[in-house]
Image (cartoon, rainbow over all chains, first blue to last red; front, side, top):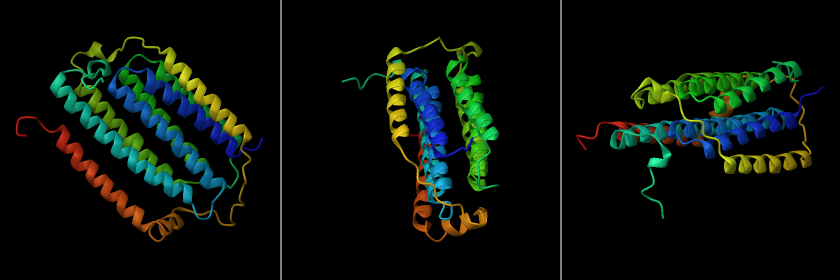
Amino acid sequence: MIIGPLHFMALAAVLFSLGLYGVLSRKSTIMTLMCLELMANAVNINLVAFSHFRTPALMTGQMFAVFSMVVSAAEIGLGLALVLAIYRLRKTVELDAMQELKG
Amino acid sequence: MSETVSPVMFLILAFATIGGAVMMLSTRNVVHAAFWLLEIMVATAGLYLLLSAEFLALVQVLVYAGAVSVLVLFVIMLTLRRREDAIRPYEPSWAGTIIAALFLGALYMAITRFVPVIAEMPEKVPGVADFGREMFTTWMLPFEVASLVLLAALVGAVWWSKGGDDR
């Protein structure tokens, strides 16, 4: 059995779908942010796998994965800061309680 | 790292990541979910090692398993008033299941139709030194932009999470 890019793509697809389910179903803001990290992680696995199988010498995919990690680290930092700010105002982290902007 | 991916290691790590994700979504305790996320991140670092991306594996352990997990655990602890609040009600979502399953089906169709073109691995597998050289020559400008993004995120996070009295 030779492990090729398709195996990594399948793994990343399963992880991304699990993260998507988590984002859509959880009602706690922190759980939603954690599932977003899971989805970003699946994307990074794909990028590194393509870097290994397609551009091993240039490592283009690895560079993309580095910048993707930067963006998702910024996202989780800002997201959790927002959660703390909302918690200070509302004393809750439930997504159901935040619906003032409902159209 | 060899240029072929070991099937046994791949299966172990794939089981670890997918099993960790399933456990993270099935546990009702938020703190346990944070620790399962940590396990997923460490297993992903193993996958990166398998793909001969040593630097990314290191960054994954430092940033995700180290910083992000600690940050998530801190925010969970800070937003819990009682210990029992960590246990969430069981919250399945049929709409979420259907959308995720449809998305997985679409991805499956895309993957089965995809014909990968595999490039030959060079004689000497590029290591961390080659990665650094590439990053600070070809990818110099994006690297600087990324550091600006991180600076803005740092300032924003401090601004949002500071106390509300002196604003």
